[in-house]
Image (cartoon, rainbow, N blue to C red; front, side):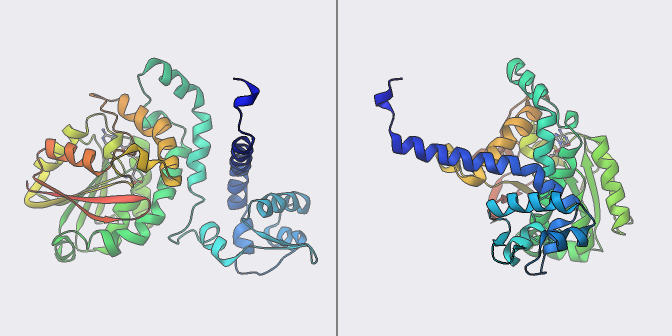
Length: 356
Ligand SMILES: C[S@@+](CC[C@H](N)C(=O)[O-])C[C@H]1O[C@@H](n2cnc3c(N)ncnc32)[C@H](O)[C@@H]1O
C-alpha cells in the first residue's frame, strides 16, 4: 500500500468511527456497573445531581462514581453542567437505562455481550474446526442476557400486537387454548402469555436443562405455574399434539435442523392450528442488512447462532439474518402451506404459518 493511495479524509472519517466504537466497547462494563449499583435508577427523574449526591443515594464511593459519570457524559448517556458540576440522566435516556420493565430497556444486552468474552477461545476453535458450539455450552450470562434483551420487546408487543395480528388466535386463547412455546429459553414469553390469557394452558420446551429450570422458577414467581409448565426436550421431539398455537421465539435459526423442527411443529398442531415464528428483523438481501441493527445481529449470529446450529444435526446454519424468504422456505419444506408476515418491529419479524 503506497502512501499516495491513502485518502486522508476517508482515513480520518474511519478513525473517527473506530474511536467512537472503541469508546462504546470500553463503556460496556460501565453500563453493567451502572445497572448493578443502581446508578441509573438513582439518577432517573432526579434532575441535576453532583457525584457526591449520587454516591450518597447509592451507597458507593464518590471518587468511583465521579469517574463513571465522566465516561457516561462523554458518551451522551448523561449530560454535564460544568457551572454547577452536576450530572443529569435525561428522561429519554432514563427509559432505556433505568426503566427495567419498560419497552426501551437495553441494559440486559450487556450480560449477553459480556458472556461472549468468556467464550472467545471456544469460538476461535469453532472457527477453525467448523464444528460450531452448542447454545448450552456458553457462559451463563448468555442465557440471562438473552432473556433480558428480548423481554422488553415481548412485553411491549407480544400480547398487544403480535397475537392479535394472527388470524383468530386471540379469541382461542381468550376462550382457553393449548399452546406450546418451543425453544422457550428462560420462558419470558411463556410466562407473559400465561399472564395475558389465564384460561389457556402453556408448555415451554427447550433442550437446555438450565434454562428450563429457570423458566419453572419464573412461572412460580409470576404465579402462573398452574397453567405454564416446562419440559427439557428438543424441538423435533416435544410431546403432545392438537396444539392451537405453537410459538418459536428467536430460536428457529439457532437449530441445526430447522426444517425437521418445522415439520414436527406442523404435525403437533391441531388441523386449524397456527404457528407463530418470531425471528430477528432482517431483509432478504445481505446488502440491506448492513445496518446498525444488522450489525448487532450479525455479531450475535457469528458467535452464538451460527455455531449453535452447526453443532447440531444437519447444521443448516441459517444465521440470525436469514430473512423472511429463507425462513418461509424452511417452513414450507416443513409442510406449512401458507406463511405470511403478521407483524414487525425494528428488532423482530413475526411470521404466521398455517395450512396443516
Ligand atoms: C436465542 S435463544 C431464545 C430463547 C427464548 N425463546 C427467548 O426468546 O428468550 C434460543 C433458544 O433455542 C434453544 N434451542 C436451540 N436449539 C434447540 C433445539 N434443537 N431444540 C430445542 N431448543 C433449542 C436454546 O436452548 C435457546 O434457549
